[in-house]
Length: 470
Image (cartoon, rainbow, N blue to C red; front, top):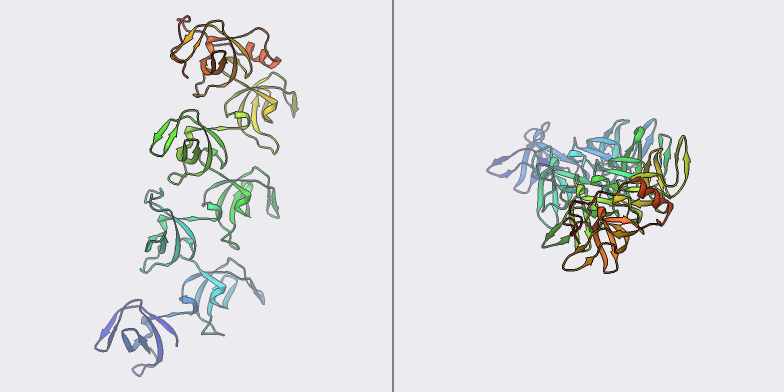
């Protein structure tokens, strides 16, 4: 009644057996009772087979020598097996030959198990049911690869191949070197993540905002949790919902961004200065690109280097800001009117971004606690006087016209301002052709306008500015 697998080819006048054929032991052999058994195969009804040319197929389809992972906890007489422990199949069960088999684990030399108590570990540490990404030889995701599922061991003798199915296609035998495991939450091994909660156990502590690296699936709950390593070599098993994936360029899902690249193709258009939202990692280049949604381009794979993070109040990293508060820390201080720069997203809950001031290296602030300093030292709301005439087919502004600064340039030009004049509701003007009207709107404006000189006007200051664009 034992199920056996042929380990070679055999043929004579009574039938044939191919390597890998599945048969059943039906009696002892009359030829050599010690070293042969009588078997029945599909194309060989009665084959007196040498036992060395047969491999037993154990209950559940397991075979001797296969590596398995325990799905249960067992403790008996100082011998233990924990969920996730790795073991080896060594033979038939000594207590229930028809339904179980025998395994060897590091702390349990001979354990009788049922097929449902263990799962087969395939090459590369993969398992049946794992979601995988099919990779090209150079490591990039194939355009037609998408996500597939591991369905078993390879049919060939290769120790590095597994069987997979992609979409509704046929079974494919693929080397594990061309597969990447997709973990719960669409995470992958090596991904950088940021924890959104405090974690602690006997091995260490992790605070909100700490950065870690995904090192693999959970041993005890492979389908729902991942293992992450954090600073100080602390390791935690975490639900993906408690982590923020750090994408290329340090971006995160949901970040508001500004494009510094103009794109137009059959899928949509993006102009320089357009605002969008990060939707996730790029499907084609996870290391360097992200997936974004823009008003006229719903799914754009774009290099992270072509995006600028937009924080609260349309603030961006690198922006010059003026402090509107007094603040003191440990041997550090900032005063109203101090000029600093935005250096990143906030590192503390309740704050909106991080700034550096001359006497305060890292200060978490709210948007209302600082004021954006625009080119020429101007601030939003400043009343300005036009110094030269400007005219194009659409609008005209005369020297001496009075206008208001309403924001940064929409073209990402570092020398322009977005202004509003009576005959011009919104236009990008060069800061050098504007001067602040007497009586600044705030003490912060006064500090900024005197501390940062306005760029010199060009030689042909009486003519329209060639560098100004709508």
